Length: 417
Ligand code: EPZ
Image (cartoon, rainbow, N blue to C red):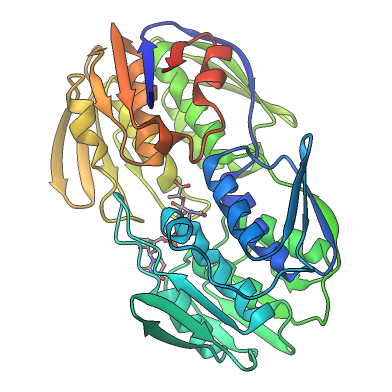
């Protein structure tokens, strides 16, 4: 089956090791197409989106091999060919292939990455910036076809710090002769990891971590060994989960330097945090304390990917919370499922929802329809009275290696079925 069963109210105790970051691994896998040599990646998360990206690389002729906990990629034999429809459709992150394939093959045909439950997910910023680098795009019977005789350096500015558009420009520019400047770049830790990986392979990217990147094109990128950073969203999910059922946990390898915003919110809600270089120890109050307002923002603001989990936590927190979602236009759908547990919401407008904290939720049958909303349902079920069953585990498996295993290690009564 494709569901998760939870017996609520077991306090969390113990420690769990945080997996590698999905949103760092995916662009780095795509960027391996640019590397003339062997890439050895450590800490690659074993999740379905990574398996999907590996299938795409293999379709392109890359040699990809798991060597226990290492992933070895050799793309020297890769050649231009079309990517199977179902694969490209199934994964929005296939859009990350635009930059590396244009740089390497000067041509690429891709299915338009679909929108999803959380929003239309347009790609206009990807297209506009790459066009400024000399790429022509045409719509070939519903497929996005792109070509560029020669990519040219450019001075670019993003009106919105799109993570994916920033990453595509970086991958298109690293081997394009001349200097490409990108202002208004995304600063997310996953963008920083991509830059660090490429620089480890001989690229020349400056301004990492800032909103202004300077990329000096190089002729060749050599192989390298690189460790994928821990996943700040998975760590944040488990950190926030503790508020629904109490207890104390240690999140081993949590990337504390990139979790300022979620740690600040956790402390505001009454968690006692002890941060060390190898993780976060958290002690939780009986009930999440007051949090009148929460807004999501681009990094280093509170991440949109933890908004649904925070919403679930606030369903039993003290007082009311106004949650403002500023990144995606449809990221409150999870309310409908949480209401089945007795949660109480007031929709202010498309971007704002007020949650009224109830003393306790009750277990219910619910359906996950996307990754982070699905994780939020699991978090809510941990703190609910009675049993919950969440269908659509496949969505959660796209980003969490094994949410049931991880939470069981922390003492939760949870099984996948
Ligand atoms: C990345 O998506 C992440 N995915 C998302 O994580 C994350 O929520 C998002 O960044 C924001 O941090 C991966 O890294 C694989 P954006 P991406 O381009 O690159 C609009 C998860 O759960 N936009 O920064 O698609 C867009 O509609 C996923 O792990 C345009 O208008 O995000 C959205 O409103 C969900 N035009 C906003 O910008 C464009 O050309 C943020 O998008 C591109 C984006």
